[in-house]
Length: 278
Ligand SMILES: Cc1cc2nc3c(=O)[nH]c(=O)nc-3n(C[C@H](O)[C@H](O)[C@H](O)COP(=O)(O)OP(=O)(O)OC[C@H]3O[C@@H](n4cnc5c(N)ncnc54)[C@H](O)[C@@H]3O)c2cc1C
Image 1 (cartoon, rainbow, N blue to C red):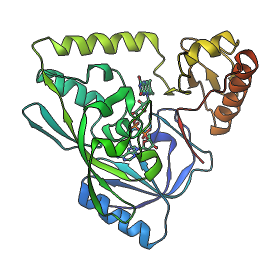
Image 2 (cartoon, rainbow, N blue to C red):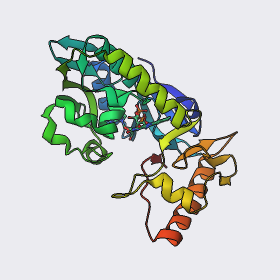
Image 3 (cartoon, helix red, strand yellow):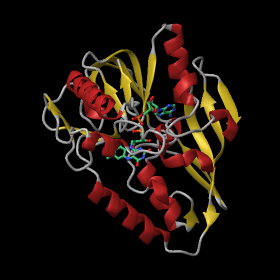
């Protein structure tokens, strides 16, 4: 385990935006994560957990502390249950479970990110399948919890509040006789055709109750709107894209303009889904 200094964060996010982290470390198992958290606490260093960076905007000045890149890739099947290391890519998890005829995760086909990031933000309601999990608190102490601990809601889990680290989680899936691989490949293809994949962080805003953020943004005249090299996608207006060498401040300015336009047009305040780390 090696702590690196002054590492550019842009390369670790799908938006390709962000300054440098003072310190950066990769963790491959629970022991390493515990050691790192104990070290950070001793040195009084703020920490930030990073999966695939598919839902993050790091600021242009980077992060004054230690970024912990999750590379916990364990995967253990037992009948219809699977214990998933938090660094496992969702794509691999979806494909591997489909191959084994285990249903329940098809709606995550085509969603980038790691299992840890997925649980933290309850991506496509993945939390419904979680039965138990292992967490680490800021002192590196292990905590075993059940599903209700997370208080999953739309794009929300309590991890966002507690700041704890998910080490692994156990999912309950179901046996299926259907061709899940075909289903998953089809769903991923449809998603790729509907949404831009290059240099985006997925949906920028949450959908307000009963509404679609992309429709509100389009109807407010913001499709294609640009600030520096940050642009509202013309293909899907709730996706912001880095169309060149955008800075974090370009995205924040674009966000401000879109929010104002939607507020003026519909009187609705859009709430950010992407995690901004300032
Ligand atoms: C093209 C595209 C399409 C997308 N489509 C969807 C979609 O359909 N549905 C959807 O829900 N999302 C979607 N997203 C967003 C993204 O895929 C999900 O939010 C994904 O779960 C993020 O995972 P990640 O590993 O990249 O998390 P990151 O972006 O690295 O982190 C996100 C948050 O989770 C925290 N976190 C990460 N790992 C852990 C951990 N082990 N323990 C505690 N906290 C942790 C981070 O600190 C951060 O606050 C899309 C993104 C893109 C780029």
